[in-house]
Amino acid sequence: MGWNTFGRSALFAALAGFGVMPWLLLAGPLLGMRWALTLFLLAVAAVSVVVFAPSLRRGLSACAAVAVAGGCIAVVTRTLPELALGFGALLAMARSVFLYRRRSARSVAIEVALVGGGLLLARFLAGPSLGSIMLALWGFLLVQSLFFLVPAAGAREQAVPQRDPFDAAHERAQALLDGLPI
Image (tube, rainbow, N blue to C red):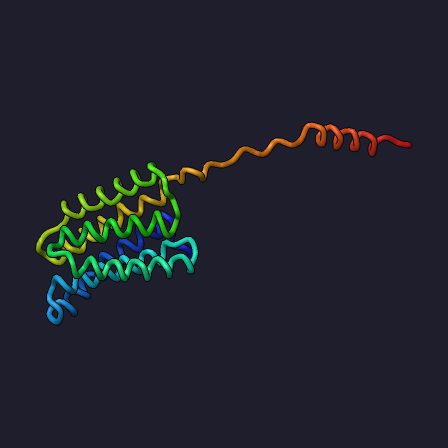
């Protein structure tokens, strides 16, 4: 079952949002809240590129790239806003470069709008409580779900190719001849 639709990606957003609370309650005391949240966000980013991929092979290769790059981002960043921006940019690159291979100015604008809008909504919903962290993650991923509602630039339906006029005339003549008694 492919998850690369708006409805299923919105369901994924809800599951990830609900999953962060038990994870932080269990892993937070052991790892510290920041590292527990960082690991959860890294896992969500890696899993999301697999489940939203058009094929499993592409998804697994993108997952490996996201896991390695996300680990580097997690180590280098100092604050949660930096981490969120890094992971958002990483998701956008994985989606447009590895998964759907859209390389145009339009796709860059779409990704900037989705990541920027998602981060703004997450910032609006974020707060110190676990519930607000849950809502912030859900909000960010919900905005990312809009990716599947944006039509691809090259996905417009092609017009039915015109048949060769000579072939069309030949077929009509053949049909007329086949219908006449000899």
